[in-house]
Length: 327
Figure: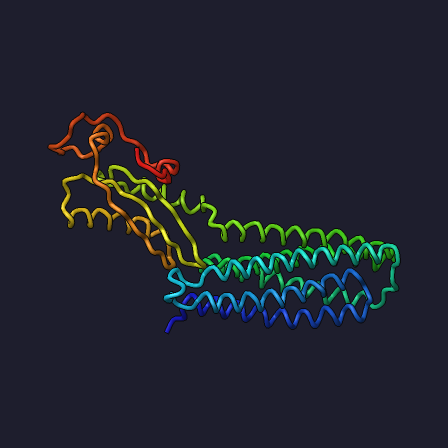
């Protein structure tokens, strides 16, 4: 029996957390062996990785719960809260790393067994990158912002690790102690900006900022599959809860259609939109009856109630589709 998308997301995040604990142990071992503040920054971020991973795992499991009386739209928003917390933790970790780097810049410590530390950090960075790539890939496939945020976090850790390893190699051959602190400051700042980026995206989703990319996909599909009796479409809205989409719009149809004909046209539009979403999508279409003002743009050739001749086709652009009122 094939696993559900929710189960797959939980398995991915469980793997990320398990690997994160192993990597954290290795990095702290490397720090205690070397006493390098640069390696300490990597080890400290691993604590954030594990903590954020556990929060994401809880959020993904919670988001998988079915809709209920108290949560008619499901529990998907919890993933956004999880990603927000992760963004805050990443930002705080970056700030602490910068602070520690500045402290050590003025009071450098003696560094030992740097070759062992370099190997451990390099291997950990490679594993983090692979985990991050896998998490982002699965997150985009199953539309989980928690997995995508976690994957980007892991990859940002890898990018900082590359620079850290390069700097540690230079430190190993030159013995210049200030390089260790400079590395912590630079890459701590990069980590902090990564956290800000995650926070910005999750806040936009929490306050239901219009998802322009999704709206544009819908606009293109509607234009490509347009039917002659779709006289006008407006009030298009998209809400996203976890991996679920809730889409609403108004469809203007000929006023003389009976209930069966109107339902058939609404169903054609619903399927046109639904085909864009591999995951769950609830689409609500309200039908309006046409008015005389639509005659110049109505494409129905054999309409015996037409008051004015056809003049031009009005394209279903995104701006038109999201208009609050027709006209």
